[in-house]
Length: 205
Image (tube, rainbow, N blue to C red; front, top):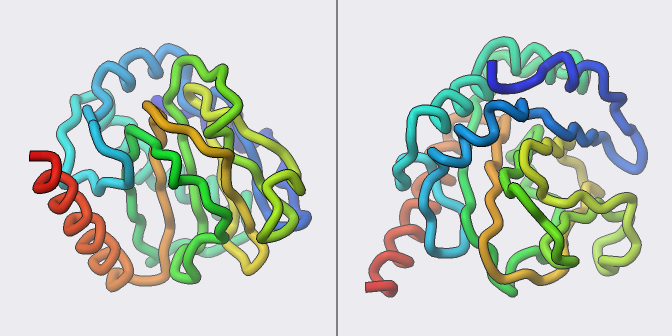
C-alpha cells in the first residue's frame, strides 16, 4: 500500500480537547513522488470532487488505499467507532486563497475528517493548519501542522473541533477524505462541489 497503516496504528490518539492525531509520512516517502506527479492540475481555489478533476494512476491508487477495508478498520480501532455502512467522500484542493482558512468545526454530517497534505516544501507561515481551543482566536492553538508532503491529520468531528489557518494564497495541495453519516450527504455535497467547480470554469473562461 502507499499508506503506512503501521505508523498510523503506532501514533497515540489525543483525546483533549477533541480527538485527533497527526501522522507524518503517512503516505510513504517512495509513493509521494509518484502521487505528486499524478496529482490533479487545479488552477482555482476551493474543493473539487474527484469526478471533476483529472489525475494519473498513482493518485488513483492512493485513493483506492484510502477507501480500503484496511484503512477503515484502522480508523475504527483508533477512534473506537463502527464505520461499517458509513459512506466515504473525497475532495481535492490544489490552490488556496486569502479567504480560505476561516475557523470552523466541519459540518455535523461528517464523522471523521482526514486531511492528507502533498506539498513537497512548506516554508511560509500562512496555510499551516491550527487545531484550536476556541472559535474566535487563531492564536489559541493546540498545535500547528505544516501541510508537508505525506502528512496526515485526522480528527473526530465534534462541537469543539475548531480549526483554521492564517491566510495564504498560492499552491496548497490537500486531499480531504471523510466518513459521513449517509449517502444523501455524499450526493448533496458532490452536487454542491460540482456546481461550484462549474462556476469557477465559467468565470475563468
